[in-house]
Length: 339
Ligand code: PPS
Image (cartoon, rainbow, N blue to C red; front, top):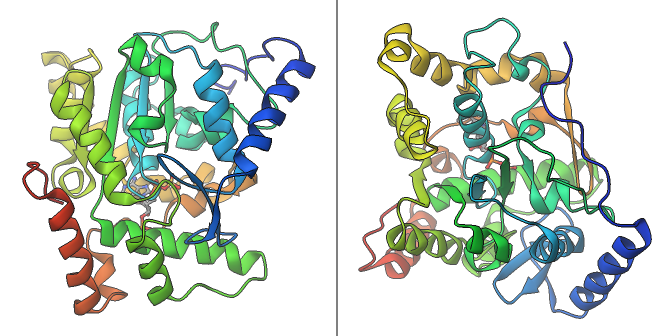
């Protein structure tokens, strides 16, 4: 089957100019504070709006800010890492492209490509390795993703008024998912695992990729309150409870509501099933596929672990859970948001 995803567009401008742009941002970011934290290399860089694990995604975010030209028809998935990005990318891609790729069809793109190859991250996949791709030729609606805080979104995203889909997850599950992911890669790199206690400390201090968690969530929550037609706000736990209702809301938000015929044909349930943890983990693209990210190729299977609500209970003491809940309560108090 030929790839349903447009071939990666060629470089925009000349390669030398792009190298210079990346070089300037790398030099600038290298001078910012760097601390130990919850990441594969145990080192995070401090940008004024949040933390970045390693320099390349930070530089990628800066290049995206300078060069990404958003269109009003674009849709951007925004998340803290380990909050449901992979799931949301799958749901959004299969909802938007359901006419040409029916979810129940035998040759859906997910059979050969992971969700991260279908919807690419601006700072982890598109603006990397001195590249400034020409994205103009991509057909509408273009789908992108990012982990950057709301305040760090490329300026053209705000100016274009394009739509943003945000997913947040209980901080305790986000923390445990991040900690497991980080330690998996640390083991591969021959590094000592980070203990759960140390991970909790880093996370509560905000020193985790795209952290502080609470600032990230609040940035998008406030944007959602200010403009709900532009920023959709989902919770992982509610998606788990009623995925079909969320697929319907997603379809309406992106301007492609399900017709009566589609409802009768079971199109919503087909998307829910296609994107379910159980189905996605059984796919060959998940079992043996890889996705090229800023620091190298990552096995698609590493984006799937348990996919549960409340797995934190298996790793955090009740006292630690209370401590994290107290921070969440204090940070979110009076803002109409509970996680
Ligand atoms: S990443 O690296 O930021 O893109 O990771 P992200 O996808 O945000 O988070 C990974 C966690 O999401 C779980 N996951 C899913 N849950 C439900 N349904 C589907 N389809 C799904 N796909 C991935 C994955 O298992 C990680 O959570 P944990 O708790 O670690 O299992």
